[in-house]
Length: 310
Image 1 (cartoon, helix red, strand yellow):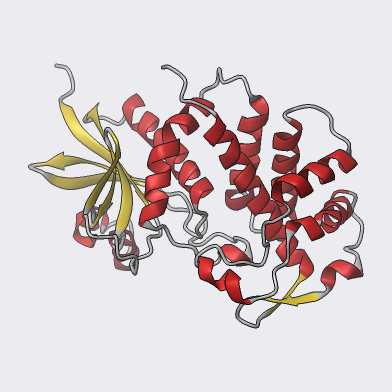
Image 2 (tube, one colour; image 1 turned 90 degrees about the horizontal axis):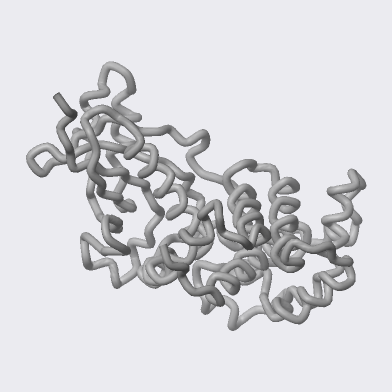
């Protein structure tokens, strides 16, 4: 007998700004089969796993308040449809990270609907509960406007993710952007990963002299304030900015010091106050600059592309 076809789902938790006044809809449609939902899973839905994971772990899984939800059809046995859904949700999560990085790692919970109620049959544990992100992004949460942006750019992002997409430099830039967040918590490795992505996307896959790279960074991204916290725009109006245009040489100096195993120059250890009066070394802000430049560069490339026909 063939396997019964079930209505299945993959859930990926997201960090949502619950103060955002626009969170009034429990379900927001992003595209066919993909939604952002509130309260889709609860702790008691993990009771099936009580002999395998603790009550604390079940409560943690059940505390997922907001999540991306992908609905698909599949058999009772786990198969290709389940893996395809996981892969799809990973791409969606990376796309959302381009829109607004948060400290929540990628995670999936999978199940099927039984009489309209979720039944959980699989879930992953992230290696770390919270990832290390630049100081200017540390309080980032997903807002309604971010979901609107995700909805707009996701079709193009999915086209870029296809193996046959020709602009390898753009795929590589996105890969190193994401790896900087998900593959390591070491700031030096994060910085180098983001700088590799920056060079890949600026050079478009060709060799580029460092002086030429620096000139392009000043021209295209010189007005970015690398101290401005991303979670609230209005902070930038009452403080002395630290612009990319004034820090390009320092970006290159830090990159060269790390890549060539040299000590970080003392000039990059100078303290700068953030918008709350806390002090951070200049190198900390340069790490934030690398991530922000790469984020902006990728989003600019995406906005210049039209979704390709499937």
